[in-house]
Image 1 (cartoon, rainbow, N blue to C red):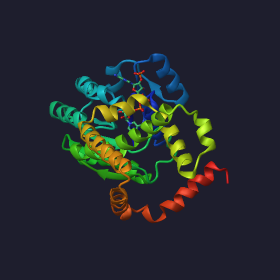
Image 2: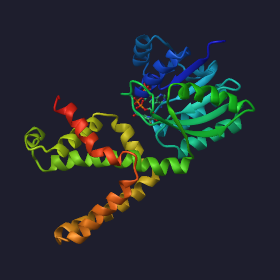
Image 3: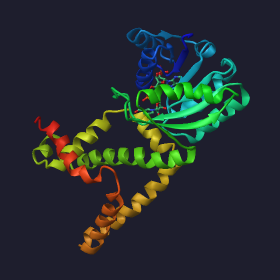
Image 4: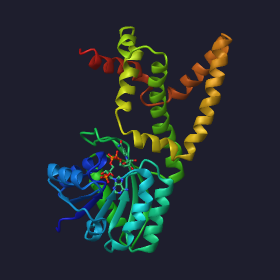
Length: 300
Ligand SMILES: NC(=O)c1ccc[n+]([C@@H]2O[C@H](COP(=O)([O-])OP(=O)(O)OC[C@H]3O[C@@H](n4cnc5c(N)ncnc54)[C@H](OP(=O)(O)O)[C@@H]3O)[C@@H](O)[C@H]2O)c1
């Protein structure tokens, strides 16, 4: 069978490298494109793939074009590449928000004879093995070969044990506001709150209980990651503002409960959280998992 050509726009970035290696490992002829030529060349050499410094030339012969650049730049790039795409090419992005990108891909497939799908891998560049990780999929449409072409790609992911979950833009953005935006925010604020107390973290750690230790490591792993993307995930999602409003009200309510030593109010919030999480798959063993994670930190 003819080797398929894939071009990765943003191929020198964190996720671009993950998928560049992935597709190379699956026998694709991989070409990467990005604006910074030096870095592009270095990454291509390091990964043993091709690079192309002209956007137009990079996509012209590609059977598949993957776009993995910051969320706000993605719709514009999708628009720009339209006229250069091969007939029946498959185009997909992996942005963490879908509202605008979904519309851009819809316009693309309406204007050109290409196939569009939008993916969201629910993992970051630190991944080693994709088995049992989730990829969210938004089907957009394209030519009469659409189903065959997208399934060729999705079957590769399925064969590696990735869990494919189909979704729609509004549902996607509402849910990731909660599953990405909220935990990111809480961890960013956790470190800021400690920082505001003017206590060096190393000193605080000497007073660390089990919960603090785990929470601290978790927050530290987040604060070292992609600030630009974390900002976009919160700032570009209208749904996140709605959550922030609810959060503000909740913090005010919490403050009153604490100020008034309102044990009834406290127990209400506590038991509502308990009821909400009870049905979750991890619930039963979560305290056990907690000590498993601690074993790693304590070097046991
Ligand atoms: N990181 C994650 O955990 C994660 C997880 C799931 C999904 N995603 C999504 O994956 C995408 C990429 O994230 P990332 O973390 O890999 O970002 P990244 O490490 O910052 O990489 C971005 C890449 O895009 C290129 N680029 C930036 N702006 C561009 C533009 N206007 N035109 C062409 N190339 C451009 C960059 O190179 P130049 O600056 O040299 O052009 C670089 O190669 C984002 O949409 C993000 O939402 C990320």
